[in-house]
Amino acid sequence: MSIQKYSVNQHPIQTLLTWVRSEEIAIPEIQRPFVWNGAKVRDLIDSLYQGYPVGYLIAWRNPTVKLKDGTTSQGKRILIDGQQRVTALMAAILGMHVINKDYQRVKITIAFNPQDQRFEVSNPAIGKDKSWVADISEIFTPDFRVLKFVGEYCDRNEGTDQDIIYRSLELLRGVVNNHIGLIELNSDLDIEVVTEIFIRINSQGAVLNQADFVMSKIAANETYGGNKLRKCIDYFCHLAVAPQFYQQLADLDKEFAATEYFKKMSWLKDENDDLFDPSYTDMLRVAFISEFKRGRLQDLVALLSGRNFETRTYEDAIAEDSFKKLDNGILNFMNENNFKKFIMILRSAGFIEPSMIRSQNAINFAYVIYLVLKSKSIPPAKIESYVRKWLVMSVLTGRYSGSPESTIDTDIRRIDELGMSHYQSEIEAAELSQAFWDAGLPQQMDTSVASSPYFKVFLAAQVHSNNKGFLSKDITVRDLITNRGDIHHIFPKNYLKSNNLAKGHYNQIANYVMMQSEINIAIKARSPDRYFATLQEQCNTKQPIYGGIVNQSELSKNFADHCLPNGMESKNINDYTEFLEARRKLMSHKIRDYYFKL
Image (cartoon, rainbow, N blue to C red; front, side, top):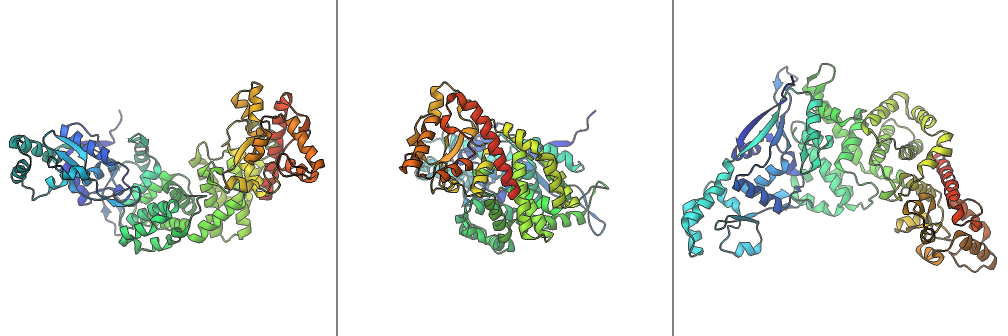
């Protein structure tokens, strides 16, 4: 027989709001952007007014923690599902301001028409309409006088029935007495069980993950500054994407603006590089992995709770130490020198656009390697090489695409035990043998997806080698990527379509090149044997027709840089499949040479 891991109770909404104000329940989302729009808040109030159910809230009381003096402490409840609904109630009923997605402090005002018992998001027109109560929060204030208000309302709206208006207002005021279900997870549950319950909860159709749980856990602990650390993570990630909000955040949250956290992220106000714009999940993962040498975020929740993995008890000293380590990891993550140096390393590997790195886990772990090796005082040049090679290896092999946390956990532990050089050599021997370059990678390149990580790494290799665009005399692949240049076909798409090839066949990545649009337009739908023959002729006549190359050695180098097999001037539709196979292998070998130069 299974043991129930929770209790279910019904509480009046007024009681829950009182708990929130007294911090009996921690609502971490209060200081994060409120993602509901006004219409959703209106619909929630209307559902309560109609007596409809509005779902359950789920809370977990922190486990009992052993304090340094030998006593124990019962933690406050953490609301792990229902933040948006509770915030909406506080905004509409209590008139509280919320923080919107632009980190602006705004008021969501809900209006009520007591004649037809209808709710709307308040607007200037409603504010001028005498039949509407423009802001329902005034009805819930302690000094609100119903009879006085009804009399004044009916004076403004001739012909209205005082009894109807009175009943409508009393029904609205009564919504705070409506009961809402609170599922409370047992405080003695193992952290692993709580995490499993948490990540199975659906909130507005989006599955919550461990990072959300960690953020809630951090925010709920004010003893060790978790509330400020939570803001630090949120604000850094927001400013990384939108630096123009720096002054707005400073004006909005003057208390936080006076902290060392805010000073240490102030460099972002002038930063416009978008190669790596981390989410709070990225920031948490990198900080946690680099500081704790662990890969599973559920372990972070446990450690922040004070979990002693050996005794399976909770100790305040462990919680305190864990918050200090996480704080240090976050500060290292957002350190201007660290962050900018890491971006420089990515660019030096040829990854110059965000779309070129398809695995967020790969880029996160590359930053982990940078921070860990820097803390060990490894020479900068070696760190750069390790980071570049690990990033490319993990992207090519899909290292973090299956069960990333397990792999990451193994990788960080092995790096810590064996050292970076030894472990990287082991991985290369196992994952990047000659068979991989000759057969494995070419086989994986048999795809039509232009966003394929293999094609992106190939482009990075071209950028790293400063290759020119296909048939370009001066424009580089870097220029084409940076300026949103186009991917074109060596065997022209319309040529292949006219020969009845299916989309998945003519859109092969082995048929792709970065090419100037004007060159592609000039080639039109001509078969390779026609336009490659013309390319040879223009080297003799010195009259450019396709691109600007009129020198044979330059043309040959351009072909080699783009991994074209020999004899293109004689290839037609009958040679297309053979061409793809040959080019895949050449592309793979170019990537191999690039990798070992990193």
